[in-house]
Length: 249
View 1 (cartoon, rainbow, N blue to C red):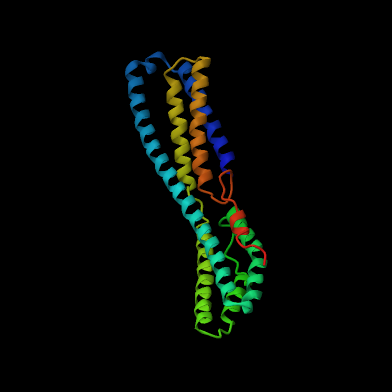
View 2: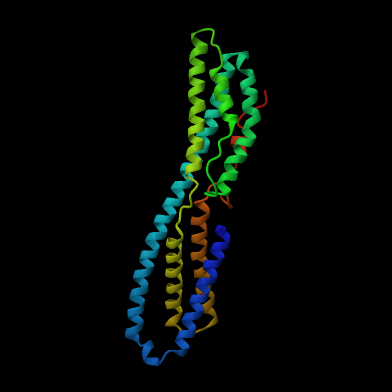
């Protein structure tokens, strides 16, 4: 389920909690709605709201950390590819076929990363030979002097670093928020909005503002869910910088 769809579900359930609170108020005996009972329920709701706020803060920090980490990995991969191409350019014309090969595989390479992220956890890692061919091509170079030998060693190391970052991106494809955790958060929100409407008489103004508050909570959940998926959604990372990292030869 996409973050937007799930946020709409949370908003609908919160509205259901508001409606349930108004309905309970109409059917409960008057002594169940006494001031003492109201104070007791509000204390419990305040405790639940505090816990929910703390958890939402932790989730926001965790989602932002995930986004920043994977964004940094993509940026590092982009820098490594540019640096690898520069090293091969300095090596000489012998490395030109490898540079052409890198430009040929970078588009499918980027597509594969973004496609895997869209279908996170749907299958095992599939080994492709394109990156391996680039690495083997670098090892197959025959350096004629110390400078070329140093450039070849550095290029081979960069090629390994790119593959390592690529694997890190794959293993970090799991969802940030477990389903039981999310279900508990939704339960807390429904309970909170039910208590808000339970001890207030129904009127249009109160219902409208409670609905706005429910929408705000749903938007907060949407930001967390969308931020935890850096390669999809409204706040996804663009693939352009990595895809266009190298100018044509």
